[in-house]
Amino acid sequence: MSRYPKLLHPVPVQIEQADRGSTIYDDDAREPIGQVAVSAVVTISGQVKYGSSKQLGYQSGAGVQENEKGYVLFRQRDLDAASIALEPSDRITKIGTVDHDVYISRIMPTGHYAEFGGNTLVKAFFEDRQPSKQRSR
Image 1 (spheres, rainbow, N blue to C red):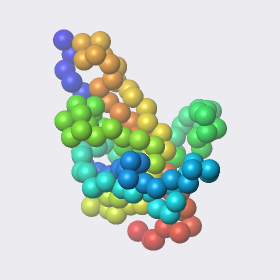
Image 2 (cartoon, rainbow, N blue to C red):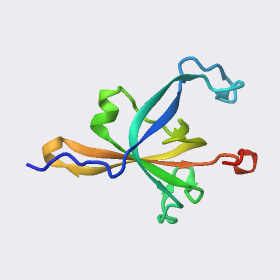
Image 3 (tube, one colour):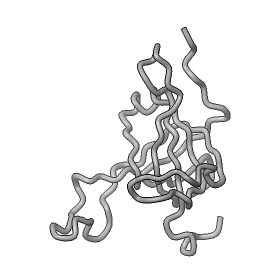
């Protein structure tokens, strides 16, 4: 039996998850009115990689994903233990000791092992939505 994967140099990652149940939506446009409501900030260990995705040819329903600025790798068992289901548009507010204002753009389950019943890791790609409005770090 394989050992469950470990993260390399994990750091605490703070995430604000969108609370779609509490958000007020425009019935015609099907978009939030004002700001999307967020749940409490959750902190979970993740392995961070900064830089653009190498998969420039990747396509989704939204088109080619070229603006990614990095990803955080999480262990699925840590997410399950904290009852966290990551979604695109969740906001990452802090990685380690550095404040951030980036949003999850894509989720990719990875590290599939039959003895664990599927994926053991989750790769959450993130990007700046409005880089010109970001405060300097």
